[in-house]
Length: 491
Image 1 (cartoon, rainbow, N blue to C red):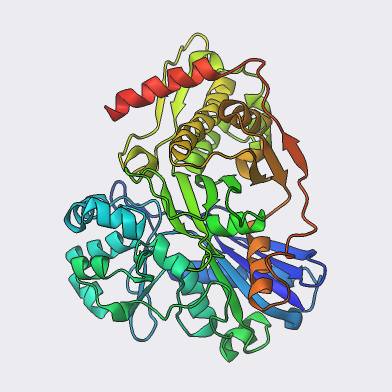
Image 2: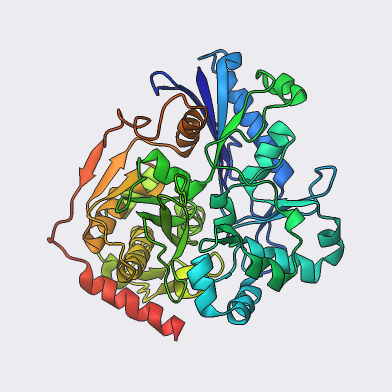
């Protein structure tokens, strides 16, 4: 049996087809070839069209089929990973009513803060493990307040992965993990939060049926099967947000294990068996893919929104025709510490770890007689690594103190400058793996269809590289300088 994994990213869709028996990936494809734009109808808003995601999913699947590496009809299960915290709204005919309000949109910050105060800080943190903040529930409340006709026409709401499953199967479902990341789930009472639903005045009928992450979320319809060369009824057996899925793909499933990624967003994701929360909601706790009430598994997530967009900006503005590997090589030609040039990587909406403040990207201490493009590129990578250290210190305050961090060999972890800076400034070794979100989704599908278990799904996966900290050329003074600049903007 073959497994199809779909990764619904902000920039593009990636799919992989994996052999369930060997765990070997037979084909991988991505669509489109250029980054999917984020639509910004108002400063600090961010939207994308769900039906555009669906079109790109179909194109990516057909592109994978075109490899000729497998027979599409041998695909026996489908898994979906997706960008977290987005809001998709459909009517009874399953038509999308408005563009999705995606993860880095900041319009609902005040609504979330008002809910936090009205419901109560202590009840929110004890039950939801988070402030309502700028998550999906608050975004829905914004639509209810500002677009009442759209809200009135809404039959169901869902997260991006739920929507792609809906398009594949014709049925909408959700999960505790998805509801928790939308701040709809009450961990204390193990139910959809009555506090949130009553405060915002939401009808519970808006929430699709709740199923386990690893379960059948519907079968591919005959029409979709024909268009995508799949067998009718092929089940979707796994759905998870991109960061829990990244953790799954790195075999980060048990308490104390920690994953990281430095792509569109920068994330450290640690697993705990305790209902932990940060009193300022600077880091966030959600249900992990293997969470259940008898054996809690919570994902404690640090997110840096501005990671990928900063490096893309540096590439576009400073890099000209250089590729990202060429930019990474150029960064290595500047000295560690970038000779005092500092960049704050917070230019993509409200940052949760900064208590939802919008600091913006800041280039500080530029010396026009000294600093070159290489300095700018290196300072961007160092600034992102410094932001990780700042966030990891918050996680340490909350009992997450990793002895090793696992990451995929992708995005900024392909840069020696970034990786060594990350390791040295956090003081934590990093294991790098040849992993991929779409492969993780395929393996999730295999667990869901019971082709194998979580215990043996990753038995053959070994780290490709281990990078350990060293003290030579310590960046601690540079980090403290960077931190002082950040605190000026937070004051």
